[in-house]
Image (cartoon, rainbow, N blue to C red; front, side):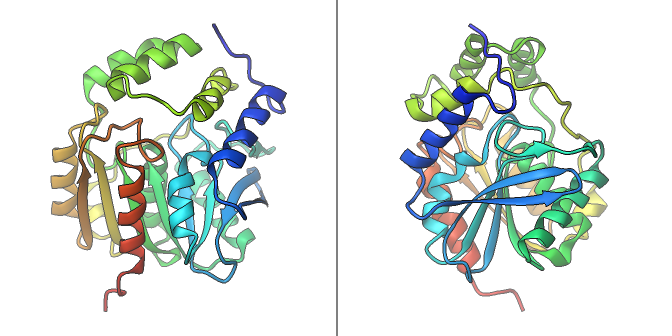
Amino acid sequence: MTSTWRPGDAAFLAAYDEVIAARWPAGTAPTVVPTPYGTTHLNSHGPEDGPPVLLLPGGSATSTVWSAQAARLGRTHRVHAVDLVGEPGRSAPGERPLRSVADLTAWLDALLDGLGVRSAALCGHSYGGWIALRYALYAPRRVNRLVLVDPTRCFAGFRPGYLLHALPMLLRPTVRRTRAFLAWETGSAAFDPVRARLRDEAVGFPAVRPVTGPMPSPDELRGLEVETLVLLAGDSRAHDAGRVAATAERLLPYAGTATVAGATHHSVPQGDPGAAEIARRIEDFLSAPVRP
């Protein structure tokens, strides 16, 4: 079984809207921000005058994965969950493609400008964590706090076994292959059927090579003065969570780490175990007194 998702596909959009209606808190509203790289769609929640938080999903995911965190953070913060341009979601690429790390940072500059935000807390999962870290290194004055949820290629590379299992899905994505890979990585955890429908409909999204780049160098990480929280999935098969935590603690001058027991790379941030704990830890981190 394959999916033939195309921009504007009715089945995908219906599945997307169903997740928002069924799993996101009341009062969630769409925000659309034009940028030179295309129109960026965000799901926004919380008091409009609250401190802003941007949530970036992992690759091949949508902003809808952040519902548990939006519900909790939205009590005190203005939460903006972002559909990455070029990935599944409601964002639409523009005439200028995202081709480099410089393009990604310029896109986030334009996104914050369009929101009227000088600085924000930035939170990313997986590939979204890599983007968030790259932006914090580029524009630390615009990132007041940084949260990385099981980030990939920030402090350690992928495990070879993870890449080997992912290869069939990457070479020819189908619903069956995607389901099999996720069952392997999560230990056959049960997925919310509402979210699973959206995931299945997103398979076959028009392939756009994601912007990638090297891991940040040790010197770059040592120079980052943004307060950072690194949350690791204890049973992640993407990388060695212990090694990631040790490297982050050794290199980042203002970092704390925590491991969510029983969580896997592809069960967070939306699934259990993990969703509620991640939401609580992010809230505690963002609410803590600012470092003098």
